[in-house]
Amino acid sequence: MTATREHFGSRLGFILAAAGSAVGIGNLVGFPVNAVKNGGAAFLFIYALFVVGICLPVMLAELAAGRASQRNPLGAFRHFAGHSLFATVGGWLSLITPYMIAVFYSVITLWVLGYLVAIVSGDLQQLSDPAYFGQFINSPQVFLFMALIALIVGVILHFGVKQGIERAAKVMMPMLFVMLVGMVIFVLTLDNAMAGVKYYLIPDFSKINAQVINGAMGQAFFSLSLGMGILITYGSYMERNNSIPGSAKMVALTDTAVAFTAGLLVIPAIFSFDPGTNAEELSTSSVALVFTFLPKIFLAMQSSVGYFGASVAAAVFFLLVLFAALTSLVSIIEVSLAGAMDQNSISRNKALAWVGGSMVVVSIACAVSFGMVPFFTGFTHYAGIDKSFFDVVVDVFYDTILPLNGLMVCLLVIYRWRKENFNRELEVGETKYKGTLLERYTDLALGTFIPVILLLVFINTVLAKFFAIHII
Ligand code: PHE
Image (tube, rainbow, N blue to C red; front, side, top):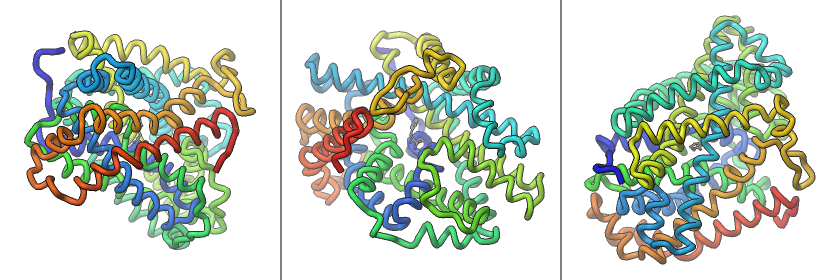
């Protein structure tokens, strides 16, 4: 253990940093597309139900476990469950998962930076060519942008929790909110935008089925950065006089509000470009949407605002995505740093060198798996589909494992640490928590149906993703 653990400087700082982690590419594009394809406001309603009914209690569990143990995720599992097999598996999963997510997320972030630079250099026209993306991700430029991302994230993390993470969030998050609202206002003034708003907001409950519910659950879970060890780690940096329930509610609300607002930007923009858009045609892949579809939409705006105006709008949008991605990336790499610092008693810089260095190497393996290196491109094959190394990392660590990790945290908190101690921790900094509806609900749900639901989602995803068996 390092001598004294760093802490966030203020409650607002913590909320912005945690919201910075939660608000990511998933909010800006994943949510709007899922919503519009799956019943608009009906999807939103189910999503909100999951956020409140499942995610919020898990969030409380992660934050409380972190703050009470003052440890990284592995340390927290050990703190409450000793050297049991359960603690070893849960703890290591909570360290390996964020490491691997960081690996592929840094690749996406470097693409965002590359696109931003291209737009600023006046290349919006080229970007909207469908072939551009494939060429770009296989060009040597990728390594330059990866180095830049490593540098930016490395500098932020070098300065630590308060001077680095918190300061970066305090700068980037307000700018992100302003850009988001500004872009929404701009897009809503475009012709046909209102058709998109209608499509987005009018509920269609007939589209809701078991699969959509499963998807809403997965989306809510990763959007709030659950099951990634992030909130355990950030909880360990929280001051004891801060309210965990109050802060968690703020983070959940901010994250959901950003996701919802992003829909008011992306969906009307698409409709304004093509009033006949049929939601079924939209790709579910956020990646495809950001890099191949949206540049086309921005270019089309030139008929009303000129090429320069369209480029400015595109540049603001990509800067927005870049900020969202950077604050998420910082939070997820911090988990590995905290793990390395706590478990090996080494300094932040030494941890940064080891974690950062190895991460760059594994990220390169991901970045070259789109054709540059055949071994990583045709890495494996399952469920009838060829999978690159990048695909495998995304399938395992982003799409599948999070509910399992969340499940482990529920079991840790309720059955190892025990309810009474968990509640006592939540009352620290929030004396009014005792006896509230949230307390009673969380106590009941975390030990009973939340783990069951998470297990079912996990099993369902494993069967569908890896064995092409669809039970629902
Ligand atoms: N909440 C993020 C999102 O919605 C997920 C994430 C967090 C991804 C941290 C990477 C790192 O995109």
